[in-house]
Length: 475
Image (tube, rainbow, N blue to C red):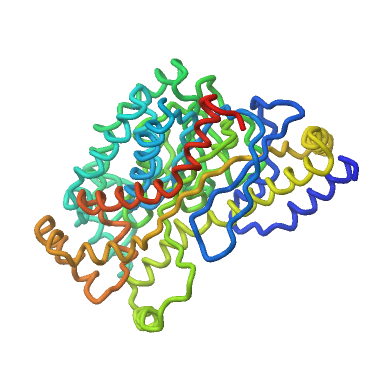
């Protein structure tokens, strides 16, 4: 089969793949990017998964050096503490195994992941210690400082329900409107804990090549990816009108906008326009990482997937709880913020398989010939991508319910907030809604340890990836 015919065949395959995620086609037909690449030696990749009852994916051999490792951090509000455990394990334990500091060249985050990404970027000069710095900020959180109901907004919401006129985006005191929680607690933490001015310094020093933060533009509904690069500007972003890249010097407003979960926290103004949680359209920012030049990814998603059917008593309890609005809201947030990455990983795996099979069948120049034909057809370059994908092995919703019912929670969280959350957890085996709200240091510590355990299960894959990136081996 000629490269031209193979290009047509692959284009047909790409068109036939499901496209539930608005960014999925870009993962298959990516833009032409000036990323270092050895001509004649396509970098074939493997996609690492959490263990499951299905057969594991085949692992191809990576035949060239890695140039940029991207870290992709999903959203999930307080579940973002799970990501900290994974990252800290990689920075500390994998570095110890290899005898060198492991580099994170590209950092991409959405929602809570944007907070983690910016913290890591701002402390890039402390390649190992930054994991500990990040963990300390999470474990120091006090729930009643973050989850503070906004009395004015609750009254305003009640007024809207009975037909009162809507007010503007800010009240008389200049406070932003639109969320039932007071945003000042999380604002103070982001502004005080992250020295944003250091990011540009680290980029100039070569410690970091790119940082992106995804947010949803309120007026248009589009995903806007704020990009800061060492060379400035934005790489070619494609023609998808639902997602645009925008050059920016990342600061607190971008992060707060990305983390502004609708109804919970108010939208945030950036350069005169309002933005909210980036996870509404792009919870796991794979495409920005590719466009910023990453040729291998570590993807962290605080989502638990139950492989087997639930036990009869669990299934019965879920059906019984279904009419409960809090139960439904928790499941809806799972679907909205956590449920769209698996198909994207599958697409990447199929792309990798096509390129690997073509190289075996037609020789080492297969990928270059294919890309030349695709370029002539106006389709972007196809690049294999090595992915280590880590997701939660424990149900964080169950962990949240157990913690809120525990004596430790009763000691730490008192008053109205504690009573309301305990009421939500009463009788619930799993409390997904709570798991998004528990900005509590002790619970975050549990999530961090869970993330470390899951990263430990991927230790060999992490070590192999960074060994190639650091030039220790080139398999």
